[in-house]
Length: 336
Image (cartoon, rainbow, N blue to C red; front, side):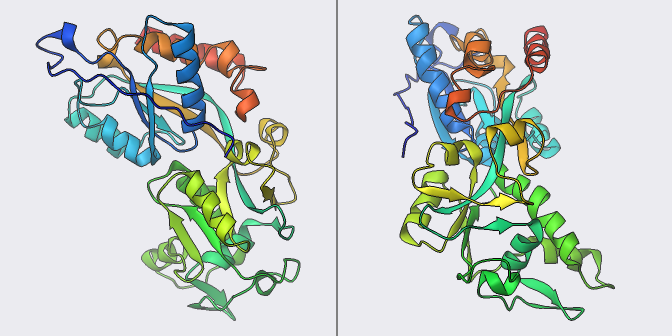
């Protein structure tokens, strides 16, 4: 794998923030989204090298949902400072944060990424539509006007234009923000295009869209390296990745088109590729001024040289957002 995942050892003191601030932890702790992980790791290493007065932040994974759970555990040196996320924080997560005393939550949107369907570089070419994906993975599909157990075993049974290859997909687990975008921008429109029988209750209709097969679908709770391992072990498997991860592994992967569009930095930035999303990290404002370098790290992350056009993260696969958007994000962060 080409992306280096960086980590260092955190120094954790015993005193609580409210008692002896001088003994508080002196290393920024970050966890969350697998998609944001490589970007955050690069910034952490560059930050440590550029600002020797601060320790290099510790960056972990765990998925967007897992990151928010840690972030919302409370305020204090035993809780993380930043949650990486490939989707916005939910109201329920914000409520959990507030209930635990985390009331100053600062959202930082820093760019965009796409979600791609990729398989072995030596495998067949795939020109997918959301309807194809839905028909391949749904536990039940509509056949002759009735909802029945999914009968498809190969892709060409789903649509004759697709390869005669066994259906096998590795998709993000429910702890990943990528999963929610996959559901929202691929599965849901795919189900609409395929059509559901009339007369279904609301619960039945929801189940038809959210219940996946167990025989051909594997849900990956770990990061993208685990998905990549699945593809390496089984050449028939198609994996769901962030565009940035695919971009760093082009030599071993082949990407599918979606609705005829090839995913790339250019097609996502132009709004042509239909499966894209903004990326975020969330800063615990109550830790600013207590954890050394937290405000400086945030500003460095969204600096032009790091996440702007032509910046370090663009070369790592980030699609930069307009400079005026970043300026608004920074102003909001500093003004809170």
